[in-house]
Length: 150
Image 1 (cartoon, helix red, strand yellow):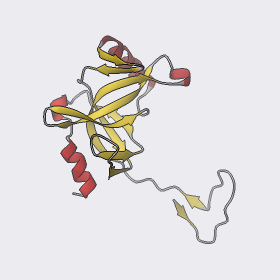
Image 2 (image 1 turned 180 degrees about the vertical axis):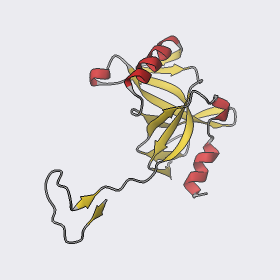
Image 3 (image 1 turned 180 degrees about the horizontal axis):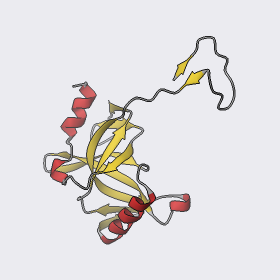
Image 4 (image 1 turned 135 degrees about the vertical axis):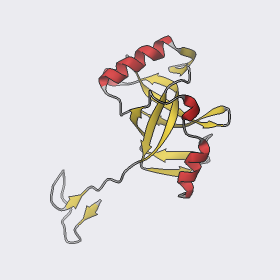
């Protein structure tokens, strides 16, 4: 946020005194591994997704994202999820790990709470990478390199 030093604090969305400056997000290509139905008007569609990064031969969950796809992509992915569910854990569906998505985020930090050892700030789907096989998805090591600023 950019703000003039002498600007007043105003209630609501006043313009002219404060400006929101957005930086280019960091991003990683990750594999869709879990899906869950959304809420509200999307309660009947799978719109909440968990993504993983490669860690050797294993896929390690690293982020959840709920936004970034258009309605056509949501419908296409929902149909695919219903046909390719491997297992169910309550409302969560484990799916065949074949789809890669570019996940954007504002920051990355170490985390003892997450199995991957990292957490990302404001994750969102930037695009569906239909051109990329999961063998070309990013690794945990690539995420750690972002953390280290390399």
